[in-house]
Length: 272
Image 1: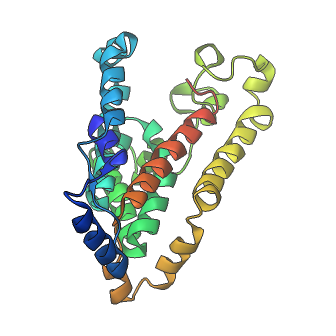
Image 2: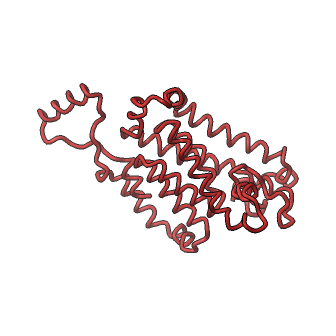
Image 3: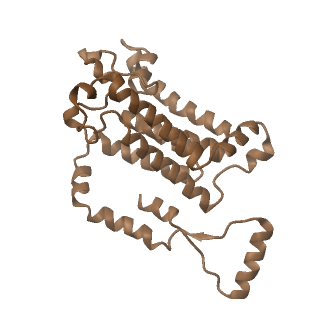
């Protein structure tokens, strides 16, 4: 996490002299290059480290080593590789996280969107194949017994399916993430409304989708480049220019991933 903070808050490198700086600026303007950045300069990134070290309650929670911690570890590794221009490796770590806990699916809209934005349609399709393919491979030990691949994919939440009455689960578990007594954000909702699909969960599902769509396509205005990459899928020259090339792209990518994920957390029905 601290390493990603250094990448995000990287500061412009200082030139050794004014004349050298002028020459470099002219060269950069001519080549349309971005300024050079040093990832080890930022004091703001150091503050992230101090916050993490100083948060006693947070450390106690992580030391408990629930499956949430393992999922978050894999997700952080995935985000790091995304920032390092390695979307396929990042996708592998996302599907590893999804294999631990279904909450990782909240990262997928932003993750797949930024892959299309930064790397194009071919890398997007390969990433989807890695994510789904790993889940299918993980399903094989169960498929050889009583389950099917479809059952496993449903239970991994990739399709948005609920428990479907498995182990006599109540109907509300098909659309709620937690019982009302364990929810953080929605305890102010009356119990009858909380467990009623049209009253709460359906509205939150719509809000989650709209939040991701607005943030990625509207607020960050990623729509034009995503469409351009789609139309230039088979253009080799255009594909050669893809990837995260500038500090601005690094910042955009991390913001899309983290803010999209947080938007999913906040609007998760029954979030705990």
